[in-house]
Amino acid sequence: MKATIWHNPRCSKSRETLAILQETPGVTVEVIEYLKTPPSRDKLAALYARAGITPRDGLRKGEEGAKPLKDASDDAILDAMAADPILIERPLVETGKGVRLGRPPEKVREIL
Image 1 (cartoon, rainbow, N blue to C red):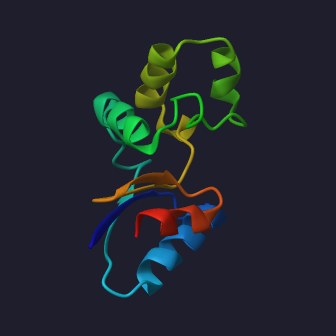
Image 2 (spheres, helix red, strand yellow; image 1 turned 90 degrees about the vertical axis):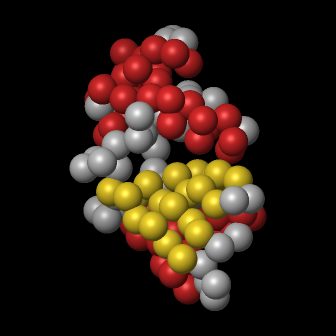
């Protein structure tokens, strides 16, 4: 099974999630450092739809740039994430079985 992780190596939750993926037999991991290679707005929208969450659920609310988005629409949040990927909550993991936000990291086991 292939798993793609949108990863930030400086984030402990992202590192923990990556370790789960790497330790799972039969899983081939593609690591995308999303701050260097961010997903497109359309890809983000598709990932959130497959995960069953809203862009607001995928917003890294503690970031300074998220404060003006408090009452923003999903479209505005996606636009902001596409413009500044630090606003994307991490890690996002995609497999053929679905997409999960690795918070907590163990949630990715649902799609393995």
